[in-house]
Amino acid sequence: MNARRAAAVVAACAALSGCALGPVRSPDPDLPRRLADAVSIETLDTHLRALQDIADAHGGNRAGGTPGYDASVDYVVKVLRDNGFEVQTPEYEVFAGAEGGRPRLTVNGRDHRVDQASLMITTPPGGVSAVTLRPAQAAGCRSADYGSVSVRGAIAIVDDTGCSVVDKHQAAVDRGAVGLLVVNTADSGSRPGLFPPGYYRQLRIPWG
Image (cartoon, rainbow, N blue to C red):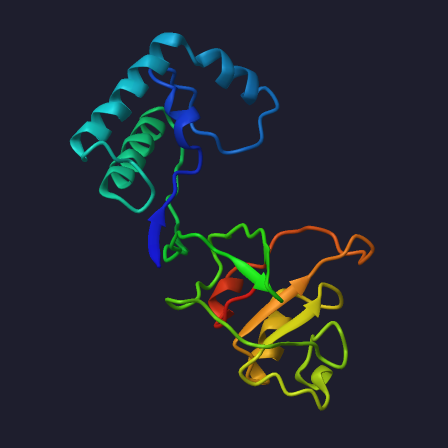
C-alpha cells in the first residue's frame, strides 16, 4: 500500500498564475467563468514547462507514489496558495500490488477469454487447478448457502445475484474453496457498479 497526497484541483488549476482572485470562502456562481478567463496559453505553457522540469529532475517520472508526484503536488499547492486559494492535501491509501501476466481460464478443456482486473488476487505460479462445484443456493452469499456441498479444495461457481462479491468470496473461503467464479447472465438483473472502498483488502482467493 502507498500513501499519496492529492492536491484538490490538480493540473488544471496549476494553469493559474498572476491572477490573484482572492481567497475563496463562499460559493460564487461567477467563479467558473472568472477561472476560465484567468487561464491563458502563456500561463499554461509556463506551468507545463515547470511540470516537465520536475519530471526531468526525477528520472522522467511523475507517476503517483513517486518523488516526482510529491514534487508536482508541492508545485501545484504553491501556485494555488500564492493566488489566494486555501488548499488541503489529504493522504489516502491506494492498492499497489497488482501484477501483470497472461491470465487464462480453462473449464472442461475449453479456454475462456479473461481480462485481468488490477485489484484481483493473482494465482500462485502454475495457476489453480481444481474441480468446480456449485452451492445448493446459487447465489452463494452465506456459508449456509452451500448446504451439504463441500467445496473444500474446489473452485466455487456462484451467480451474480443477492449480495456483493465480497460476501460471496467470504462464504466460499469459509467453506474452504481455493477459487471463486461469479457467473453473470444476461437475464440476471444485476447492474454494473463500483466496488465499496477497501473491498480488495478482504479478498484472499482468486476470483473472476
